[in-house]
Amino acid sequence: IQWYPGHMNKARNQLEDKMNLIDVVVEVLDARIPIASRNPMIAELVGDKPHLIVLNKADLADPVMTKLWQKALMGPKTSVMAMDGKHNTNMQALIHLIKRAGQDKVQKLQEKGAATPTIRIALVGVPNCGKSTIINRLVGHNVAITGDKPGVTKGQSWLKTQHGIQILDTPGILWPKFDDQAVGYKLAAFGAIKDTIFHADDVALFVIAQMRQYYPAYLAKFANTSKEALENISDTDLLLAMTQNNGMRDDYDRFANFMLLRLRKGKLGRITLDRPNHDN
Ligand code: GTP
Image (cartoon, rainbow, N blue to C red; front, top):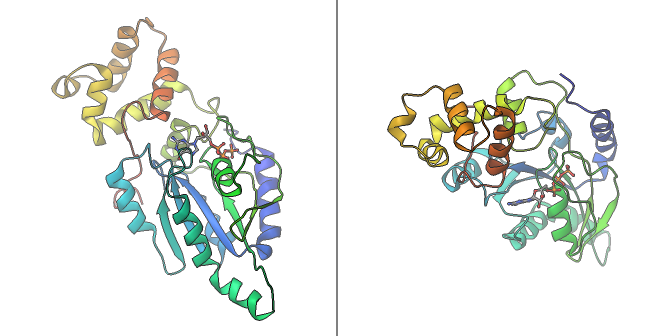
């Protein structure tokens, strides 16, 4: 399956080249899929630099799980925070954590006599996790392209902020192979990989199975049925029933796309599909 566009490969190489200029790596994850939206190459890329994990889109994620993930992802050189870039929550906390992570660098610059020391950061993350949105918030006005489609950010440049922070804008990176199809489905479900890579009905079936396990009440509500009734129907029959109930006859694909759009917007409920202790 073709799902690793060439420009992402190029982006990774460019990022590797610029890593020695970066003081703090800000890794933006989708709070609904903190593991699936993690790039396995990140550890290598970060090395022993200070590292900040941002669980973005926390407004759409299950708040209980977000709390658990904040603890689970913390490390000696890694701090973790949750935010909602779109509605600008926790921006001050983000700036504070970046400054804390970059304090060694600032001290070094001050010792060298710099009057206005600057922390240089890179935001990295899969497409659509909210990098551009957060960059725009940090800069204070719209500088990077924000869009719903994966892979919108293509350029790379230094952006200035009023907080003593400069940002390297980088395109999202996905990993070259997926060994685990569930990871691919999760990324597709939340719009991090293009809709054309999987059939929408396969992704919807995956989501139904996950919701049955973790969020049966939300699934019942969306399907307009009871939790008990759900237990007696297979995933495929449920998909068919929902398709018909929504007046789409047997057009699974159309219904699946509708369902995924609702999911992405949080209209099925605040859902997190990666669980600490289970999937990792
Ligand atoms: P690429 O350019 O594809 O790499 O995407 P990106 O990571 O820069 O994501 P971008 O900032 O373009 O955001 C993608 C979509 O998610 C946009 O429609 C944003 O408005 C939305 N978005 C970003 N952050 C949040 C958030 O915290 N909560 C919600 N609800 N939506 C968000």
